[in-house]
Every structure is written in C-alpha cells, then in structure tokens.
Length: 198
Image (cartoon, rainbow, N blue to C red; front, side):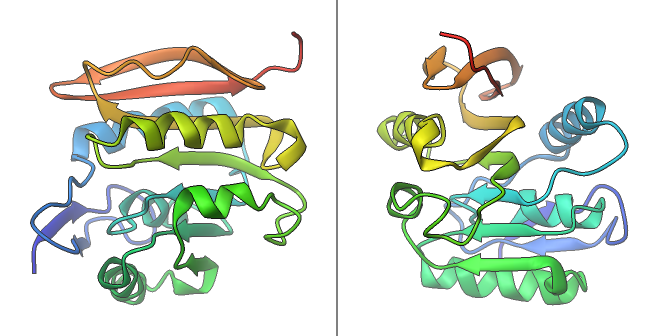
C-alpha cells in the first residue's frame, strides 16, 4: 500500500501512515511541521476542539492533530477506499477514540451547516486539502466555512488551505481573511483567520 509519510510528533510520533492510492498527495514532513508549528503557536496552551480535516485522504492532518493532543477530529472524505484507510491509520496509531469519520462529499457536508452536523460549538481549526486541479472546491469550501450563518467556525478559528503554489485562493471569504501564505516547492499553505468587521 502506498505510503503517506509519518506522524511527526505526539503520542503516535514516528509511526508511518498508509495512503489510499498512488494519486494521493500526502503532506510532506516539512509541510506538516510548518502547519502544526503555526497552529500550536497561535492557540496557546489548549488544542482547538474539534478539528476538521476536509478532503481527508489518508487522514494524515487529522491524525497529526490527534497525536499532538486534539481531543476530537472530524475527518470528511467521500471515497470509500480512503475512508477505510483512515480507519486503518487510526487503529495503527491507537487514536481512533478521538476520531469521527464522515463519508460524504466535503462541500455537501459544509452546506448543511454546523447545527445539522451536531457541531454546535463550531470548529477551532480546519485543514482543507482538495485535489490541486479542483480549485473550485477550494474556493467553495472557504466560502461555506466563511458563511457565518452556517456556524462552522469559532471566533478564534484558524483555517489552512493546502494548494498548488501558483493558485491563489481568495483573500476574503465571508468572515475569513487571508493572513499569510507559506510555500514549499509546488505546495503552498494559505492561513486564514476569522474577522467579524466588514
């Protein structure tokens, strides 16, 4: 089975993860380290809960969060093979207790709103990782997350979008404002913060 890299830190640090297929673009160690260093620097002493892993693939981002102490991670992935691999990776890392796996299209999931998804408190951190070719899915995910009426985000939430470096996600999506971008070769991470002013 293809490899999806390793868990960098925490209770499952060093364990390798499986990928659903050769077409999966797992987070490299460098990208993962930068993403979680930024998250941990901005959240103080407590992990944001719950954490949302959209277009979860192997589940690498959410599993890293669980390993580092996130109490709850919701994995949203429509592909049945990927969902099975996420479950296997969670069992291998002994982190399945804090996981909720939702087999559903990410945009369909976001469209129902947090209340319908039993996520009344909103998410504290979100990672979006759609296929690089599907730039519409990235923009649409940001639009739904940034729609305050859908209630997905806490006031202190951070949203991180992983995308091809030449693509430029919107600077503003509802209550989400682009804060900064980091590039790693062909991959870029765009970091968004919640803003409530117009």
